[in-house]
Every structure is written in C-alpha cells, then in structure tokens.
Image (cartoon, rainbow, N blue to C red):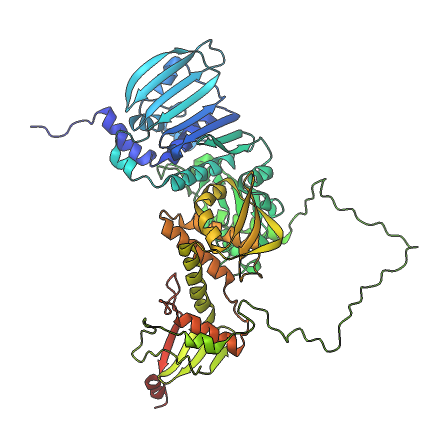
Length: 589
C-alpha cells in the first residue's frame, strides 16, 4: 500500500503560513509591502486588538483585475518572477507568492480592488483557504485588504500570541522599518480607533525625526559615499547621542531592512574612540548594491542577507562612518539660523564678568548627596532586627550595629568593613542599587509614591512605539514618585519626580526607563514593576568615584543589611564577599 501522498492545498498553505505568518506583525508587513510594490503613495493601516480582530491595509496603488485578484491567493502566484534568473535581480519587496495564500489559510480575508482603467472593481471573500464569494463591486482605485480573526482555525497558534501590548509593539517595529525606507509615501496607522501616527511625505531626515522622535533632529550626521561596490547614504548619530540601551540601529539594502551583525560591528569600531565603553551609537544606513551580488532568499522573513564582498564592504562602511564623525556638517534651519554679530571698531571692548567670592568660602565644606545630611545613628541601630542570610561564606557575620565598625573606602568604589571573622568587601554602587530597588518596589506594592514637585516642569515627547507602552507603566511610575500630565500628541509634562532624586535629569531618566521596558518586553505586571524599579535604581545610585562621609558609609551598610537579599543586586551581580581571617592568615604563611 502506498503511503506517500500530496497534501491538500489548505494544509500546505497552513504549513507555509507557519514560516511566513508568525504573528499579526507578519501580516501587516506583507500587506504593506504589497501596497508599496503596487505603486501606492498613500497607505492607511487600521488595527484592532493588536491584529487579532482586524488588520486592514488600504492603498491607492494600481489595483488588480478580476482574474489577478483571484490568482493572488494561489500558492506561488507572483507578478515578479518569470524565470529563475529573476531571483537574482529583484528590487521589489515580496516575491515568493506565498504571503496572501498563507494569510488566507489562517484568517478570514476580504479584498476590494480596482484598476484605474476599470469601471468596477472586484470583491473577494476567503475563509481558511475557501473561496466564499467573488463579485463586482464599486470601489476606489487601489486595493483594500481586511484580515479578520487571525488564526481562528488554529487555536493553538492563536493561544501562543503574546499580550496585545507586545504584539502591537511588533507591528510598530515592522512599520518603522518600512516607513524609514519610503519617506515619499504617506503612511497612517490607527489602533482601536486611535490615530497612532500620520506621516506626511518628506525628506529622509524629516521622516526619521517624524517616526522616532524630535530629539533626533539635531543629532544626525549625514553619510554619503559612492563606490563601484556599494553606495552608502543615510545618517549616523552624533557621539553624544549614543546610549547604553535603546539605540536606533537600522541597516537597509536596496530598500529592504536587514540584520547584519558583521556590519554593525564595523560601525561600532568606528565609534569606539568617540563614545564611552558599552554605549551604542544611532545609525540609519542605506546601502545600494547590484541585486545579483546579494541573496535575500536565505531566510523566510528576508531580513538576513548574504553579500558577495562582505570584507570589502566592511572597510568601506567603517571608513565612511569615521569620516562622517570627523567632519560633521553643521546644518541650521532657517528658523533657527544664528545671527552673527558684525564687528564695530567704535564699540568699547567687552570686559569679562567679575565674580565676587567671599574669602572664607569653601565649596567642599558641605556634602550634597542622596543621603540625609544628619543621621540619628542611635535610633537607626535601635531598630535593627535582621534574621535573614547575609554572606555565603562559612564565617559570615552580621555587623554589630550598636558599635559600628570602622569602614574604609577604596578608589571611590568599594567599602571595606572590619569584622571579627575577617574583612568584608562591599561594592558601594551595587549596594545602593539593591537598597533603592527595594525602596521602589515597596512603594509600588504599597502604592505610596513620594513625589517632589519640579519648580519648572520638563516636557518629554515619545515616539509612537514608546507612547504605546507608557499606559502600561503609568501606575508604577506614579507609585515610584513620577507626576506626569498628558499633553497630547505623545507629549507629557513631568511635574514631579521621586523624592530624594533631586539631582537626576528627569527627561533622561524617564527615557531610559521606557527604553528598558521596551527592551525587556515584559508580559507580566510584576516583571514590569521590577524592570522600572531596577532601571531607576541604576540611574539614581551612587556614581563611582564619589567619596562618602563615615556616617554615609555606615548608613549604606545598615540599609544593605536590612535587605532580604544583601548578597546580590536584582539582576544577579554580587554585592559583597568576606575574606575570612583564616584565608588571610594563609596568605602570610
């Protein structure tokens, strides 16, 4: 009996969908790319429930005939490939001809389309690969795809979708990658009847600013290099705009977003002399190469691309970035032009300002820090009641808080505490991170935010992706002590900050916390709280090199040992260790 047979089209399409349609963002990507290939210059996207309920893409492209509209849902149906050689000269986006067939196999799809030369258009309804209706309809030129109830016929796939927050963030990520390549196309996005963005046609720099935030406007350095191997265009961020996390790093080749760690490394090395260790630069690099010199077909999502001459291109990219950093062009908008003063020989010379300083003034007499200027140590040690584990070494010992031991500071980073059992070495900054983290978590759990009002409120503006995650964080931010007021258009006024953090930059701190939340992509409320608490603790903790008074050192130690987890920071880094007397004696044998 024969056991090998051909799969029905409906099942084959579902298998293909597993590769092409992984989540709602995949559907958005395929439909928008098809609209671009159709020559549209205005694309509208409507989403409901992060794509679970509805994904609709409406374009004003060339539309399809009745026959093409039906053929578009067949497997391997494409208008872009006639021979195998065409695979090596592609300049369009989608080309496999599997996307619409795959989408229609796992959703309910409605297509309305019309060419400009036709009097009427075509309506097609397909559900789980089954054609339900095809008829003539009155419709504007272009195409309108509506994808409803994604994965309705595959409950297991639907079950494994992430939260709406995460799935919508993935949609925004895909749209960012597309809109940054086509600044000449108008894009709009609505989610649950709320407009997320409306991007007008513009130049590339303005599109970058419109998509990712106004703060980039003065931070972009142009890159433009043409060689026989590759043409490079785009922008890099100024060295000052580099960040520890959340940097904007985009590579595109022939109008297609790509991942390429090898080329990212080329840019990182070029920036190394100009930015702090561990920082990541912003860049928007657009490569144009001969299509026959790349292979875009090595991955189903077409984001991993293989180049013929990667080593040579690495050198060209690195050199281009180095030159751009060394010779940044100064661009001033007309509105912000600088009026240069005209020299006047009759004008009297300008005298430098005189600063009156009292003879006895010493700026180093007072210590300004995040600890109390005066600490009632007797009361603090009176309330000591600690029963948890402290050290992992055999001779672990809790300091006697009634008679504080002498502490020594080493290189502005460590505290050395002498105990009966030996020497305890404490990383000051990590200890402070643990202390602050515990405080912020307690505030969130008890919903008792302690806020200090700002005399002059600060304004922070988020890009669309940041703005979508903020509603999930607002409660915790309020409990920590942030007082935010929604000004509309993704802008917020920072009216208050957590008490005790008077020396932080409110905008910078809040931005870093949002970046961290986006980076971790937390699904659980508790994880979001922990992420925010840790991000703020790291921002507010004692900087390396800062000297502490004896009282401040003792207070830090006291608070550390009141923690339920004094050994490690919340992200698992060791805070302290004990060098026992026994180990010390061994060293002198």
